[in-house]
Image 1: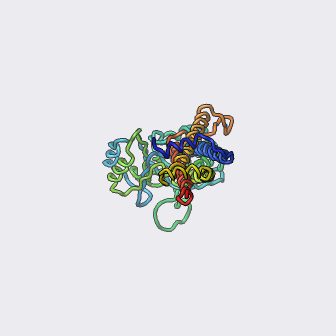
Image 2: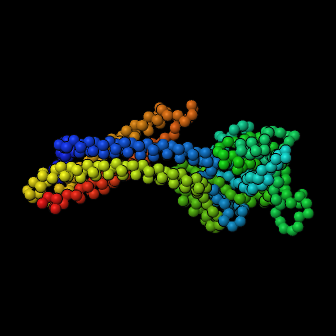
Image 3: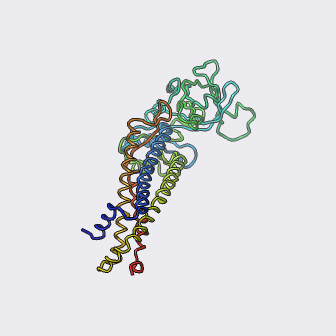
Length: 399
């Protein structure tokens, strides 16, 4: 057996003659256990909150969306449409038109996005699951589905034939405008449904039929502002993106779900990093206590170390004794704490012990990534603190 490890193990399982050293070592070990458990629970809770936050936008965002790099719109030729259909990994696609326009209803107005979608849109996105009231619109009709925020702002009624929702879209072209009729294309819309997702999204879109949007914007039948895609399970996103760029001669901007919500993902990742650093700082402070306990133990065992040194044990091997001891205490405390953290997370996940509302449990997610992060943090910081403390064993101390 490795001699330094053998001595380190004996020092770890046996008590020191000094009760102060035993108390400090116990406090350090308890701190490591609590720190490891707390870090894992916090990371698991934040993973749950992150997944919960993203779930709102995921029902609105496709796996991939393409838009024109040059200008607002682009044309899809029959040949390009056929090539898109042959791309392996695409489960569904939907042609869309998005344009910021003016909506009027009984003297109230709101400027937001008209989103024209074809009949395949519900195969790409799960927007129908988020309907708060009413139903999804019928294709090739003036029916629309509005967000809950727009519904509230306009005090909008559903299926109101006597008081239709009006949309005004600026006419394309140049030249002087003599009256409002020349400046805008307008039509009456029939709201048949209200969706509710999040405060931001509920005020963003009015969904309409693609043909209606093309008429208002005076687009050609094959002219759109974007195409949205849903992938088959296990599809290769990078390969699909490369094929789409090839089909459209690299004149497209391609964004996946994370890129479509770039600011949200950045915010959540920043918050997660901040939380991790805060709890890591707590663990660092705890490991200072461990380093102090090891230094005190070195002083307490000075006579034994001098004897071993005189018997021919090298200083570097004497240092390894306390490096191993600190690593053993860190590993034991980290594993015990991690086990407690896993138990807490699994109990919450399966038995919903803590509730946010009477019907909604506090979201937590157990994943291997958080497990690895906690183990790597505890073991690396524990090794560093033990290395610093063991460096106090010097030839000068033993002479």
